[in-house]
Amino acid sequence: MKILFYGTKQYDKESFEEQLNNYPTIEITFTESELDTQTAYLANGYDAICVFVNCNVTNEIITNLASCGIKLILLRCAGYNNVDLKACAKFNILVMRVPSYSPEAVAEMAMTLALSINRRIHKAYIKVRENNFSLNGLMGIDLYKKKAGIIGVGKIGQAMARICHGFGMNVLAYDKYPQKDLSFVKYVSLEELLKTSDLISLHCPLTTETYHMINEKTISIMKNGVILVNTSRGGLIKTDDLIKGIRDKKFFGVALDVYEEEGDYVFENLEDDILEHSTAARLLSFPNVIVTSHQGFLTKEALEAISKTTLDNALSYQNNQIITENVVK
Image (cartoon, rainbow, N blue to C red; front, side, top):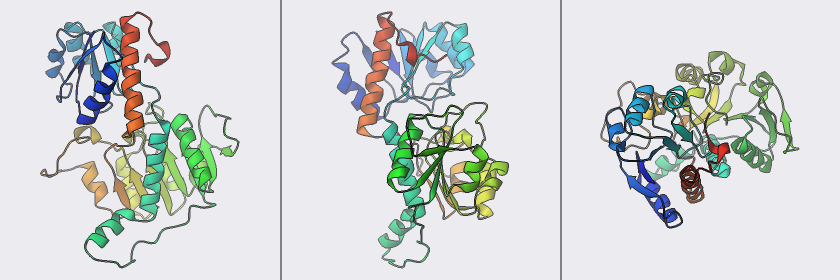
């Protein structure tokens, strides 16, 4: 089975090559090129392609892939809102994903961001490098006994809830389908969570229902001085409304590993470019905002799990024993 990997980074190549010895019937070609309407034709002669979450797999791209004979799209990620599933169904192209790789990796990143923005680590780091040991502008708050609001309580949300509980926080949660596994979690309405939480962390998928769920109205409900963290999907937050809230001093801090518009920039080195009209540039202009480059998944353990599950998906397709729970419908 021949698979073309689009948008390959060095860490992708290393993690998949480490696993390939266990899959002798699978052959991978890596390309740094991202999948688009033109590069789709590179897939001619391959059985499947593999892409990451930053790739927008549109109807036109899928049409081009189908003309190349592609019948399987492998997502080396959990999210699939970037794939036109109707177009895939039209051309009988199966889409498989990695529904869970390392919930702890993303949850630990979420808490890292919460702690960093709370204690102004980004500012302290820069100050000390300039021999400025003043403590002005570095005051944070104790998280102990504060309320943590977890929106979305899947595996990542549950991992984040456990971390917050370990910090001695009172954990509130909102989810359409509550998980009863964690006895210390109190499920409340979204409105109550927004009104009472000192830390709000987003861990839900991006759907038509959750798109821009953090907007001017929901921000207005939040407590003044709240910390907002998003390691899920950028589209959960309406950026213009978030910026207005920051300017209105609604937030003690905002920490984002994902943000709207990131598809143009994520995982790329643009240090010599001027980001005109960029969401990232606007957000980075505020002293109480941290933006990172969608790195929540980037741990050794997570990459190992992603590569193994992706190759298991490919092998299951090849052997006509498809892992149904990993199929995107």
